[in-house]
Length: 284
Length: 225
Image (tube, rainbow over all chains, first blue to last red; front, side, top):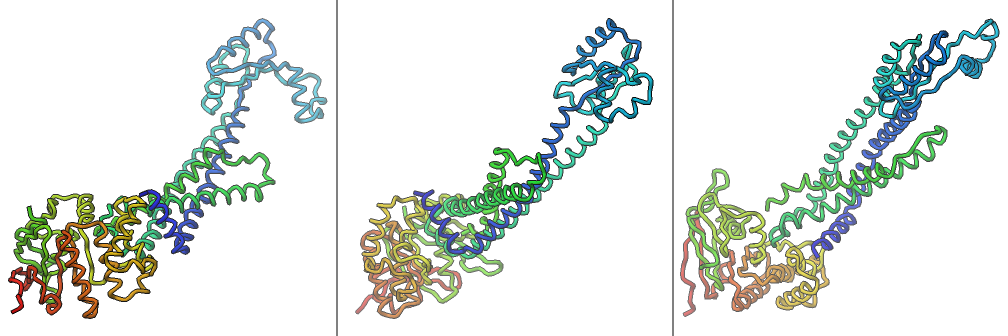
């Protein structure tokens, strides 16, 4: 009975003051839309980083003097290093073919012999595909006999890591600002609604309503407004994704759990915001 | 044990002392009128009983609930055992007569069937069963007061507190309200009525309490010779 009454009261209030309801829903929607956009960007950058990291490897260039037996030994030693997933041997001839495939054969035809060294392409296990992981393996391999030089993509991976950390921090900051702003605006919107109903609240208190009984309809109202704002924000975000970004291949939409989280965040903000401003009107 | 006990009550608003060392006991099922000039503290005394206000010093005990040590939830429960009638009625304009009365039961968590039964009974009791669908703006002052009375009575209260209940009514409507109070009182509900309409209560054989300069005095009811 109590919950049914509170739900009926919440809808009655929203119908009675549709402008305030629209303002509350609109505020939450805009706040969550801005937040959602940043989450979308961060999510895609992180996804891109994951894809790029899968390509992080280390290449050890070998001296021409390395014989088959030494090569087998070296390959075994590298493969047994911690963090190494697999090792692929690229012979001088294969290196030449790769070079021609990438850059054409005009340069190589000028030379009498193949200047490209044979190499070991070292693939790392997933958790070591970071700047530090690649650096550590490269340093160890560099000191081995038969290795003339080592290359790894640690430089740009490090840059990318820093970018993702910065973007994540910005997203969290925006999330906090959005949360605070939403609670502030919703609590003020509710304060207007409460002000309009202060006499009803006073009468409720005087006929014996508990604080919880008075608060419940406002909580339901705020939560419903937040939920609506969250769903609308998600819808607009999806529409933007679908209609404005089709040219950007490979951009992913937020996974269902994050979408649910965004809507839930709206409901939570609405619910909390509705309670912040009620206290002073309950002192009857 | 008396229903209402007030011991050495002082109430101050800033530097203004409204009640000064007031003592009062109201028995269950009793009827008392509280008179005094405007601003003499009648409303404050009422508010102390339904605990909208707390005393600056002294203690109020209503049906065992003590003003000094009571939590808000207990105050809410106490108010469900009291009926309060205001001079300005305090009806919700966007609700019908029926809904206004039902409101007092909804806050107690009563079930739908119980609400329908009790609201119908309360409206019939005040003689307005046929106006259940009317909004306050469609009712006269006397009718609005009777709707407010139905709301105050719907929980079958131990005590009816009426603050200037006839202040906005003409003589006939005022007399009708007093008659209703007497019926309510005869059925066991204690009544405390604040008024400055002395002619209206002249013939009532009830306790007379008088507030003046923050002091409470009592006089015997007038008897017709």
